[in-house]
Image (cartoon, rainbow, N blue to C red; front, top):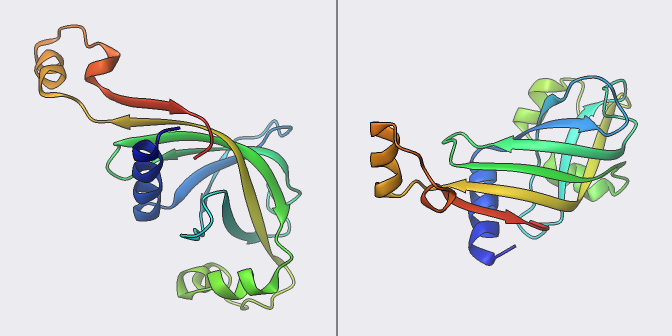
Amino acid sequence: MDTDTRETFWKAFEDSPFIMMKLDNDTGHSEPMTAQLDKDAHHAIWFFCKRDNRIANGGRAMGQVATKGHDVFACISGNLTEEMDRSKREEHWNRIVESWFPNGKDDSSVLMLRFDIQDSEVWVADMSIKGKLKMLTGQPIHSDEAGEHAVGAV
Protein backbone atom coordinates (compact mmCIF):
# COMPACT_ATOMS: atom_id res chain seq x y z
CA MET A 1 0.00 0.00 0.00
CA ASP A 2 1.40 3.43 -0.88
CA THR A 3 2.31 5.89 1.86
CA ASP A 4 -0.30 8.51 0.90
CA THR A 5 -3.20 6.05 1.09
CA ARG A 6 -1.87 4.65 4.39
CA GLU A 7 -1.54 8.14 5.91
CA THR A 8 -4.97 9.20 4.62
CA PHE A 9 -6.54 6.08 6.14
CA TRP A 10 -4.96 6.51 9.60
CA LYS A 11 -5.76 10.24 9.76
CA ALA A 12 -9.41 9.64 8.79
CA PHE A 13 -9.66 6.69 11.20
CA GLU A 14 -8.23 8.82 14.01
CA ASP A 15 -10.91 11.45 13.35
CA SER A 16 -13.64 8.80 13.32
CA PRO A 17 -12.34 5.75 15.26
CA PHE A 18 -15.33 3.48 14.79
CA ILE A 19 -15.20 0.06 13.20
CA MET A 20 -17.70 -2.76 12.66
CA MET A 21 -16.08 -5.96 13.99
CA LYS A 22 -16.96 -9.60 13.47
CA LEU A 23 -15.18 -12.86 14.22
CA ASP A 24 -14.58 -14.90 11.07
CA ASN A 25 -16.17 -18.04 12.50
CA ASP A 26 -19.22 -16.25 13.95
CA THR A 27 -22.52 -16.48 12.10
CA GLY A 28 -23.82 -13.33 13.83
CA HIS A 29 -23.62 -9.77 12.61
CA SER A 30 -20.77 -7.32 13.00
CA GLU A 31 -21.03 -4.79 15.80
CA PRO A 32 -19.70 -1.27 16.22
CA MET A 33 -16.61 -0.84 18.36
CA THR A 34 -14.61 2.24 19.28
CA ALA A 35 -11.00 1.72 18.35
CA GLN A 36 -8.27 2.83 20.71
CA LEU A 37 -5.48 3.95 18.39
CA ASP A 38 -1.77 4.31 19.07
CA LYS A 39 0.07 6.73 16.77
CA ASP A 40 3.20 4.57 16.98
CA ALA A 41 1.44 1.27 16.25
CA HIS A 42 -0.08 1.12 12.79
CA HIS A 43 -0.17 -2.63 13.05
CA ALA A 44 -2.77 -2.88 15.82
CA ILE A 45 -6.01 -1.44 17.18
CA TRP A 46 -7.33 -1.94 20.71
CA PHE A 47 -10.88 -2.28 22.06
CA PHE A 48 -12.48 -2.43 25.47
CA CYS A 49 -15.48 -4.75 25.83
CA LYS A 50 -17.23 -6.95 28.37
CA ARG A 51 -16.06 -10.55 28.66
CA ASP A 52 -19.46 -11.72 27.39
CA ASN A 53 -19.23 -9.60 24.20
CA ARG A 54 -19.57 -11.55 20.95
CA ILE A 55 -15.96 -10.77 19.91
CA ALA A 56 -14.45 -11.36 23.39
CA ASN A 57 -13.30 -14.90 22.57
CA GLY A 58 -10.94 -13.48 19.97
CA GLY A 59 -9.55 -15.25 16.94
CA ARG A 60 -9.55 -14.38 13.25
CA ALA A 61 -11.67 -11.29 12.67
CA MET A 62 -12.59 -8.66 10.14
CA GLY A 63 -13.50 -5.04 10.59
CA GLN A 64 -15.10 -2.48 8.28
CA VAL A 65 -14.43 1.25 8.50
CA ALA A 66 -16.45 4.08 6.93
CA THR A 67 -15.13 7.41 8.13
CA LYS A 68 -17.40 10.28 9.09
CA GLY A 69 -16.83 12.22 5.85
CA HIS A 70 -17.50 9.06 3.81
CA ASP A 71 -14.25 9.67 2.00
CA VAL A 72 -12.31 6.68 3.35
CA PHE A 73 -13.55 3.09 3.51
CA ALA A 74 -11.58 0.04 4.60
CA CYS A 75 -11.89 -3.65 5.25
CA ILE A 76 -9.28 -4.90 7.69
CA SER A 77 -8.53 -8.50 8.63
CA GLY A 78 -6.37 -9.86 11.39
CA ASN A 79 -6.37 -11.58 14.74
CA LEU A 80 -8.05 -10.52 18.00
CA THR A 81 -6.36 -11.49 21.27
CA GLU A 82 -6.65 -10.33 24.85
CA GLU A 83 -4.16 -7.55 25.59
CA MET A 84 -2.20 -8.68 28.63
CA ASP A 85 0.07 -5.63 28.88
CA ARG A 86 -1.34 -3.64 31.81
CA SER A 87 0.38 -0.47 30.56
CA LYS A 88 -1.74 -0.57 27.35
CA ARG A 89 -4.92 -0.72 29.43
CA GLU A 90 -3.71 2.25 31.47
CA GLU A 91 -2.64 4.17 28.37
CA HIS A 92 -5.98 3.84 26.58
CA TRP A 93 -8.38 4.15 29.52
CA ASN A 94 -10.14 7.54 29.44
CA ARG A 95 -13.42 9.22 30.40
CA ILE A 96 -15.16 8.07 27.23
CA VAL A 97 -14.21 4.44 27.91
CA GLU A 98 -15.26 4.84 31.54
CA SER A 99 -18.69 6.09 30.45
CA TRP A 100 -19.25 2.62 28.95
CA PHE A 101 -17.62 0.79 31.85
CA PRO A 102 -18.51 2.77 34.99
CA ASN A 103 -16.97 0.24 37.41
CA GLY A 104 -13.54 1.38 36.25
CA LYS A 105 -10.48 -0.04 34.57
CA ASP A 106 -9.98 -2.70 37.25
CA ASP A 107 -13.44 -4.23 36.63
CA SER A 108 -12.73 -7.93 36.00
CA SER A 109 -15.65 -8.14 33.56
CA VAL A 110 -13.94 -5.61 31.25
CA LEU A 111 -11.57 -7.02 28.66
CA MET A 112 -9.08 -5.22 26.46
CA LEU A 113 -8.59 -6.77 23.03
CA ARG A 114 -5.75 -6.16 20.58
CA PHE A 115 -6.54 -6.49 16.88
CA ASP A 116 -3.31 -7.29 15.04
CA ILE A 117 -3.84 -6.19 11.45
CA GLN A 118 -2.61 -8.63 8.84
CA ASP A 119 -4.28 -7.40 5.67
CA SER A 120 -6.44 -4.54 4.47
CA GLU A 121 -8.19 -3.03 1.51
CA VAL A 122 -8.70 0.74 1.50
CA TRP A 123 -10.74 3.01 -0.74
CA VAL A 124 -10.18 6.77 -0.68
CA ALA A 125 -13.02 8.65 -2.38
CA ASP A 126 -11.66 11.74 -4.04
CA MET A 127 -13.95 12.36 -6.96
CA SER A 128 -12.32 14.40 -9.70
CA ILE A 129 -14.13 17.43 -11.10
CA LYS A 130 -14.77 15.45 -14.28
CA GLY A 131 -16.14 12.56 -12.21
CA LYS A 132 -18.42 14.89 -10.20
CA LEU A 133 -19.75 16.44 -13.40
CA LYS A 134 -20.43 12.98 -14.84
CA MET A 135 -22.20 11.94 -11.65
CA LEU A 136 -24.42 15.05 -11.72
CA THR A 137 -25.36 14.41 -15.35
CA GLY A 138 -25.83 10.64 -15.00
CA GLN A 139 -22.86 9.68 -17.19
CA PRO A 140 -20.74 6.59 -16.45
CA ILE A 141 -17.90 7.21 -13.99
CA HIS A 142 -14.63 5.33 -14.41
CA SER A 143 -12.75 4.16 -11.32
CA ASP A 144 -9.81 6.47 -12.02
CA GLU A 145 -12.22 9.44 -11.64
CA ALA A 146 -13.47 8.34 -8.21
CA GLY A 147 -10.37 8.12 -6.01
CA GLU A 148 -7.78 5.55 -4.97
CA HIS A 149 -7.96 1.87 -4.06
CA ALA A 150 -5.14 0.03 -2.32
CA VAL A 151 -4.61 -3.50 -1.05
CA GLY A 152 -2.08 -4.48 1.60
CA ALA A 153 -1.29 -3.81 5.22
CA VAL A 154 -2.28 -0.37 6.47
